[in-house]
Image (cartoon, rainbow, N blue to C red):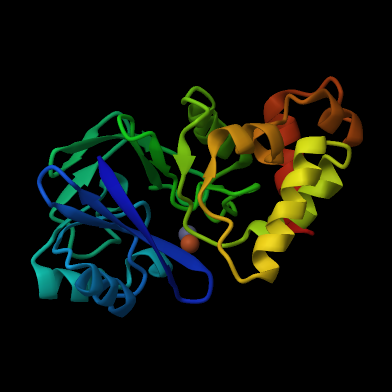
Length: 254
Ligand code: ZN
Ligand code: FE
């Protein structure tokens, strides 16, 4: 069993503390800031043993140096980002297995947002940490990769169990929701989800995590094959990659 604690930091980031209950090992995923993480670990009485990274952006790594200095934690990150992430002790790439405590996660290579980006799937616990590849009702901006590349990356998630809980790295859901409605305006699941999201945000509550099932039903970036979306975009006979590219382009200009 893994206990997951969500820690909001910077303006809209989430990082996560994971405790392996069997061994007491504690991992932090994507600490963009050290203080809130160290404070929360202290409050919980958890000793951080591992730092796990999805990509090199500052809002995911800037807390690494201080956390490592204070805890001696082992830092693991993407093999392809070795040249631009400091303090790495170990690296993993798509197809590898990450271990911390008695836990194992499958590593997916999910380039697009950045070229080194990886994600972690803890199969036994049914939880996914996609970093900035997948958001609630959205996907990461394409800073380094192509839309084709990002669509390839996201397709790896389509085969995971739909009850998988998705802990994404930002609270972008409300803005994503407004956009999703322009792509998929008649989707009843989406309309209902947006109402729930508006309520949660008006109460100052997080909309993360979500489940893959919710994302499969409502996230336009995972649904380029949907007939209603294709009709809305007037792309009935386009490829999924072409539809995905159009949705991403529209979001960039939204
Ligand atoms: Zn990022
Ligand atoms: Fe980010």
